[in-house]
Image 1 (cartoon, rainbow, N blue to C red):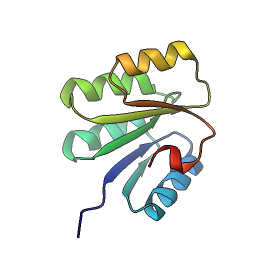
Image 2: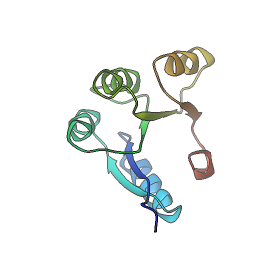
Image 3: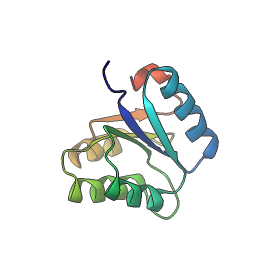
Length: 113
């Protein structure tokens, strides 16, 4: 039996975190949700996740800054950024900073799996 992929979901909107965690569980993943980007960063320092899915617009620590910090201490970490405020320039910047994908909200869970 293969291990379920572990996914850390980060979004300041608790309902989005809940939806993503539930949806990813249904898709066979082992998700963990966090609504505070700074707490998520601390969790990432001590826990391995196969994939990180993060919102871009969050208070305290924006998704792009979170991405850069993750890549600083874990350069091979797979990170997907999602946002309701996407633009081509932001998507290009995210990929250049190390995101493997940039997905505009709203989206279907199939976009992540």
